[in-house]
Image (cartoon, rainbow, N blue to C red; front, side, top):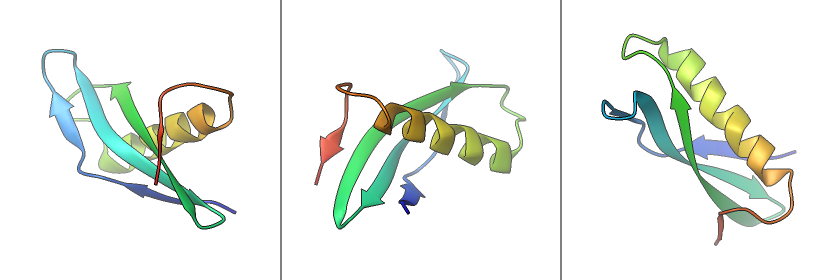
Length: 70
């Protein structure tokens, strides 16, 4: 089972997207993913969090890609 935590969520009005660092802890190692999801400024916070987490899990499931291991 993975533990997921989100950094500060910011809205980028230039791209119309929410951006955050998403950390996934697996077996004592933390994998960090830069995530971004498009949406209106009025988008529900729970939906934003769920979408960012889902994107990080998708990124974690594939080989390669941009991430940091701590």
